[in-house]
Amino acid sequence: MQLAPEYQVNIQGLHPIMRLPLKAAEKIWKAHGRPEGVTITAGLNGVHSAGSWHYCGCAVDLRNNYFNAVEKRQVFEELKAALPEYDVIGHSTHIHIEPSDSLAEKWRLI
Ligand SMILES: [Zn+2]
Image (tube, rainbow, N blue to C red; front, side, top):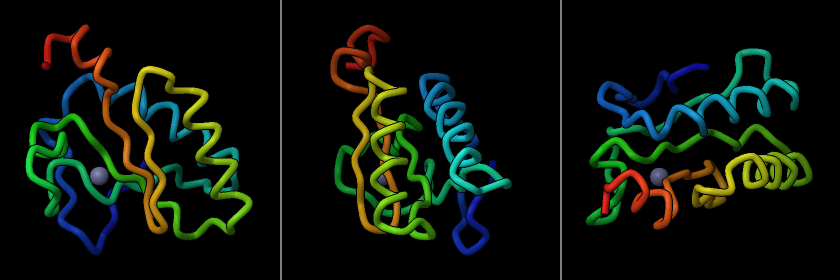
């Protein structure tokens, strides 16, 4: 697991609810030819929409822009399958992960 060097990635204060997604991603990225594992581009850092889960440490952005289109799709699908209780949202440069509403309710976050 790595923090993107070009951003001031802050994962201090990341909520424990995000450990499972990072563990799953690490395994998937390595299986897709990234020996360094997954690269986090945003935890608590960055500018996000108002009310974003990033601001309370309940979201991460994971780099996917080095994958080709097919791999990108596969990584996305594998991540979704591994994390049924999370919202996994694919963007062109990263995948955003946050807890689903039901998981957030279970943890009394909403
Ligand atoms: Zn995000």
